[in-house]
Image (tube, rainbow, N blue to C red; front, top):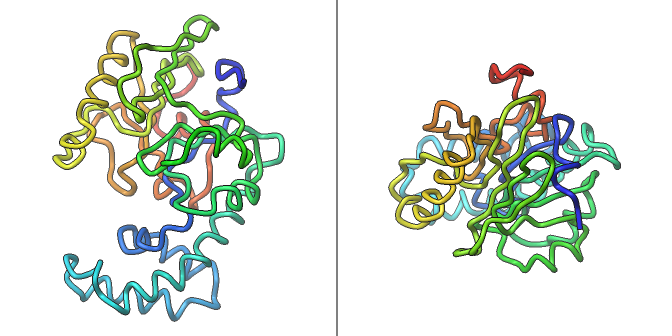
Length: 257
């Protein structure tokens, strides 16, 4: 069992929503295609074609457009290889990485083994396998409940009401931070309909235990609606790479207290 209170600190790497093996993410988040076009000259023409189609074809037709889907399926392998290389360029074998959900849609063991670091998964809505599956694949821990680090002691909130009701509250550099997949104070109608009860409970935890900052993912390139919310979906990480928690805090104006 990993002691989260000890291993998650300012030097822990943080990332969310890698979506390995998910071809359609390239439709939803074209910034990934832009990075890939610059990163791998072998697929620049295909990337540019996809970007042009995403621009000229109405958004409601993207999911069913044959050429868009073909290009996404072709490019996802190159996209995944790029993310692995970028990850391993900054994360060493002994580093700790906290992923705030939506890791991979398939090939969990393959992608896990390809990535450096001691990896901790805070389950997202697309992480559908059992915790045992992720542990067997090489993850050090899977956060499936709301856990609180209070004065160096770890407490678990109960009862657990939903598989996706999870989070981790701790102090880093003097700030009380809630790590979660779902951003709190989220006003997206679709999210509220499907996950509103989860975010309501996370908001209660945040307020009850003096939370100051919420690190979350889920919304990809969209910014947080909460002024003290920091979106660490991969689209917001420098060059699509994991970033140290301390660096993310400093970049967002939260210097060490």
